[in-house]
Image (cartoon, rainbow, N blue to C red; front, side, top):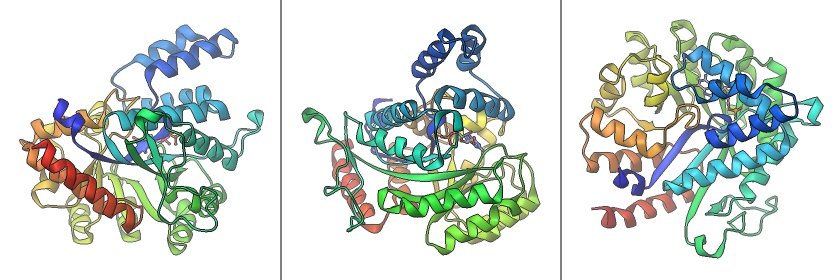
Length: 361
Ligand code: 5GP
């Protein structure tokens, strides 16, 4: 297991509010309990429950959002999430999060994202590198945006942000998120994600905002095929996003289209199994996609909600699909090709992998 921790890794599918430590969630819940806003004893078992259906997961997110939606907490969880990924040698991280409006907290989508940026700046265990694309609009005059403590200055993690559109949102709200992403490009925002409860909302509602994002040069990833919905899956693939997440409920026609378009798939094994979207690893589509050398990347989805780590996901894939350490190293390195950051970052990551290749053996 230590080998998988030491392996440099690239995380491309991690939702901020799904990647909160249980200990932090419980602490936040206890605080709100003391203030009489929630009943802690009702909430504790919900947080600690292990297996949840996909629909129960979205109920949990509604609870998590009650606990986290204020600026200070958003900053705190962002800092912790980056530190937790860095601790297991994630060297490049794309965090996705849904900008939220909350009038009672004076929160706008923009101020929510400013709180996220504060979180990146307050990371202390690792240097957070924004770099590349540094230009006159960039207020940071160095590549590193935080002040890591002196003993950790050597360790670094590249972080980029994706703004998520929630399927509950209107066309206008989705457009607001895309415009915010465009305004924040010089602050590490590289793309847009479409997520949220897959049985809610229509593709046509989000399409105008996604089209606009695409024409403006933002990279797009879509949660695609979490439930059987061939019509939507085809429409999403026709849109040609740069990546898709999950691809669980695909039929033959959908696989054929995906493979011919060669769109990389973000694979979240534990998430799929725990939500029972896929009944067991022996029938998981990872095996077929891997066999066909289809571009794919192993990710956590929500490491807090699903009690996993990226190292565990690599370890699990290796044993479930009979892959050697060599295979796993290549799988991890191949993910560099699918990141949304620019070629300069890709080159730096290639160097990191090349130098650890010798050490890891
Ligand atoms: P946030 O965007 O609030 O930082 O992270 C939590 C949100 O991510 C959830 O409310 C939901 O919209 C989205 N999300 C997290 N996990 C999943 C998942 O497995 N499937 C889908 N479709 N959305 C998810």
